[in-house]
Image (tube, rainbow, N blue to C red):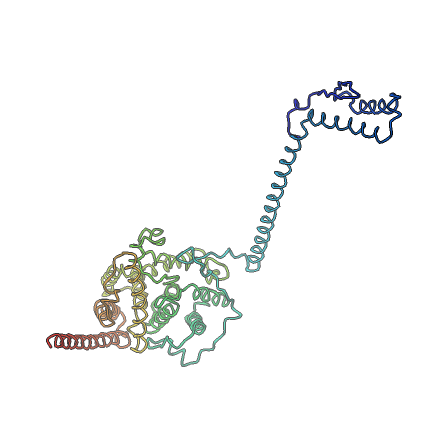
Amino acid sequence: MGSSSSSYAPKTIYLDVEGKVQRVSILKKWILLLCEITFYVYFKNPEQSQFPFSEKEDMFQNVLSQVAEQFSRAFRINELKTEVTNRLAMLEKRVELEGLKVVEIEKCKNDLKKLRDEMTSRGGARVNCNCKYNFTDDGKKLSPRRDVPSYPKYTLSQETIEALKKPTFDVWHWEHNEMLSCLEYMYHDLGLVKEFNMNPITLKRWLLAIQENYRDNPFHNFRHCFCVSQMMYGMIHLCNLQEKLTMTDMCILMTAAVCHDLDHPGYNNTYQINAKTELAVRYNDISPLENHHCAVAFQILSMPECNIFANIEPESFKQIRQAIITLILATDMARHGEILDSFRQKVDNFDFTNEEHVKCLKMVLIKCCDISNEVRPTDVAEPWVDCLLEEYFMQSDREKSEGLPVAPFMDRDKVTKPTAQIGFIKFVLIPMFETVMKLFPQIEEIMVQPLRDSRDHYEELKQIDDAMSEVSKYLHSSVLKQ
C-alpha cells in the first residue's frame, strides 16, 4: 500500500522457546514454523505434556505474543496502521468533496433543465438579462413579469379617441394598463400593425416590456414616456404627417418616442460624466444615457416574444433600427443648438422628398415632444415641473455629497419654479416650436400660443415672488432698525 518494494524485503524474527532462541525467516513459511513450535510444546516435550492444560495454554499465548510482537516490528505494523488511517481519512475527505461536487453538478443540471424548458416554452427566446443601469442591483427583467392574458383589455370611448389626438389630453387621469391600451390603439390607428404585419399579441407583450423597463423616477418614468408618445401621435394628426411622410417614418417616430428614455436612472448625463459612472465609461462620455436607452430598446426587441418587427425584411429592419437610434440620440439636450440650427437652414426650402430634410424634421419632432409639457394646459403641465424639480434636487443633493459640480438650475437653495421655467420656455421651447411653425402653421394656436401663455404665467409668478421678497427684506430691515 503505497510504500516501495524495499519495505517488504525478507525479515528475520527470533522466538524464545523454553530458553532456546529460534531464528526464523518470515518469508520461509512462518505459519508452518508456528505450527511446529506448537507441536513441540504440546507433544514432543514429555515433561511439558504433564502440565495442566491451562499452563500449556499460557505458554502457547506467550509464544503467540512473541510472534505478534516480532511481526509488528518486522512489518512496522504501527507505522502501517498510521499510514492506513491517514489514507483512509484522506479518502473519506475526498469522497465527501466528490459527493458535494456531485450535488452541485446535479443542481446545475436541474437549473439548466429548467432554463431549457423555459426557453422552449417561450419559443426559443434567449435568456433574459438584467438591463438595469446599476448592474449589481436586483433589477427588472427585459421581458415583462406578467404576460398578455393578465393585461386588461380596455375599450376606448370615442371621447378618449378624439382626446388622444390633442395636446390638451390629461395624462394624469390614467393608470399604467390604460396607458398601455392607448399606446396599443395608436399603433393600430396609424396602420402600423397592418403595414408591418405585427403580431397583435407581440405588440402587447412589447409594450408591457417597455413599461416595466421604465424606472419609478419622479420625472423620467413610464408616464413621461406616454406623454411624449401621445404628443407625437397628436402632432402626426395635427400636422397631417401621414400625408407627407411614409409609414416607415410614422413607425420610426412612434417607436422612438416610446423607447426614448428606457431605464433612465434619474441622474442626467452631466452627473454620469462627472461621477465617471459605468455608463459614462462605457459610452466614452458621449450621450451615455441616450446610448443606453437605445441599447435597452433593442435588447427588448431582440427577444422573439417582444419583436414587433419580426415579419419585415432584414434590410428594412436595419434602416428602421438606425433611424430610431438617430432620433433617440437627438433627445440629448447637449445637441439642441446643433440640431435646431440644422433644421433652420432647411425649413424655408423644406423638401419632403429630400431624405436629409426628413431626417432632420424627425429629429426636431421628437425633441419637441420630449419637452412639450408646457404646451399642455396649466393644470396638466405644472405638476410635471414639480416632478422635474424633485428629480433635479435629488441629483444636486447627491452631487453635493459626492463633491461634484452642481448646476445652479438644479440647486434647491437657488432655484424656484418660475426661474426654472421662464428661461427654458423663452430660450428653448418657443424658438424651437416657432421654427416648426414655419413648416406647419396650424400648430401656432394649439401649441405655440400655449407656450407664450405659460411664459407669461411664470413671469407673473416671478413678479409676485420678487415683490414678496422685497417686502420680506423691508420688514426684516425695519425690525433691525427698531
